[in-house]
Length: 99
Image 1 (cartoon, one colour):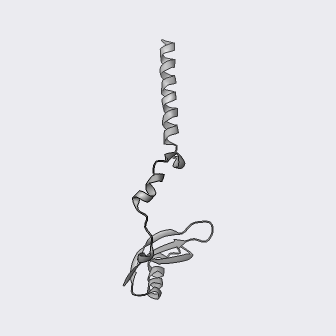
Image 2: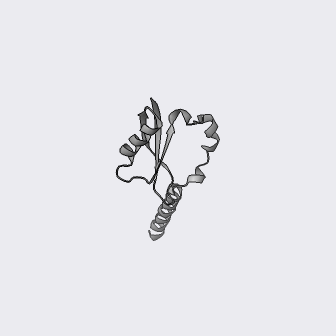
Image 3: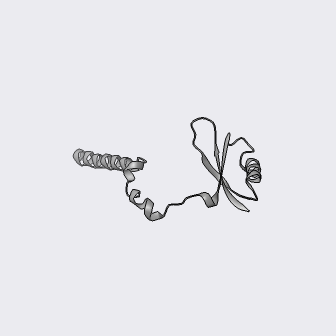
């Protein structure tokens, strides 16, 4: 028995997404099981199977140099917090001027 990782993709510009994993005795059975388990409701038009033993996994130390670059994945929270702070300071200044 081998463990297979299942990836599905809809036609178009979407990328392949991990759908799950399954155990199968051979490649052919793995395809049938993946189709019946993960693509029954047309979740994808394309199917990839990868034996888990063939997946390469990088060490955390290898990926670590990129962990300190939050500016590359900005969700807007820092800008929103800064704008809120500026508005609050402006409101405080307005209140002190009106007294």
